[in-house]
Image: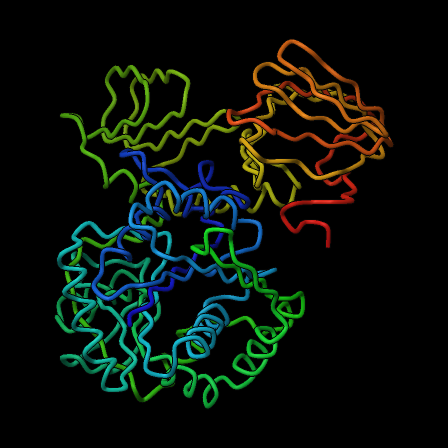
Length: 472
């Protein structure tokens, strides 16, 4: 049995403003309409012998991930989510998946560790590489995937190899050293994908990274388990004590220390899409070397990546720039310095600016909300509630709300009253009132919410009852 494990998290700060802390890189939709997470899942389920897929992710991303899988899971492969209360790097995530698979399926079950934010264009070559890795893993080897380098890349780690033997792992090099690696011919890019038996990795964790092995095991023993009505989706929610697990990468914790390491060299059309320059390379360019996503009109523009999610972009006399426009933020960067976009995110975080975390449209378990306008003491939102979904029974200390239903029919709790609100009807929620909004119908409910008050932050909420486990 082969169990793919998708690691899904991270901030993807180099791909701001499309990637945000609360809507990270795995959810980034490419030009073909699929997200990186959906592509990772589809890639995994097409492999031979896969009966289940595990995803290790943050608790906040569960519902969005479940929705994305549902759109592409045509074969109804069972999916299990291991939900972290906080990220503790790849060693803890892989340890949790390993111990869970060992418990459910036994020592000899083979795990394939994949990342949710990389792209692999050659499925056939990928399947062949996995088959080679499985054969090595069956001999109690821990297998990593090495990508045949195309250029002297300074943004990747390297593996020095002798055939399938790993000689050493190397950190991101300088350009001069990367050129030497390329010329040597026996250095591979480290793709961050691994294959091993559950029992073998558990033993290595116990021996080489005892603190992580022990603390993750204790967290799994305390975890809450739940299964969907269909039985196809299960959750393992790790407790708050998981925050005490030491944070370390799997490379430092295990791979650089283990004597069981092997490597499969492969050419699978791999990219970690680590910058806007890399995103540009995924798309066809025009005769002037421009890659364009969205609506734009260009005059005397060359070697640029221009992307817009809605508005028309006009550009004149530009060369070698990245221009990415979203409803609430615009990025303009020298294409050669696109790795430095993360510095913008760092400054946004220092300023406590919402653009570091959220888009104008924010996904919630029950649907979405979009901020339409805001100013001193007011904010307007467009709220969409999925069929059968319900917001939590809640209360706000500092703001009142006015709800106007645009389409559908909403079931509303307002204080001690419960009633239905149809299209073109409204209700007013005073500050301090318990309230709830639900959609009992089979089509979406769309409404406009007008908030007024002295403080309108998203943290002004007290939940009394919730269908999605957000009440503590």
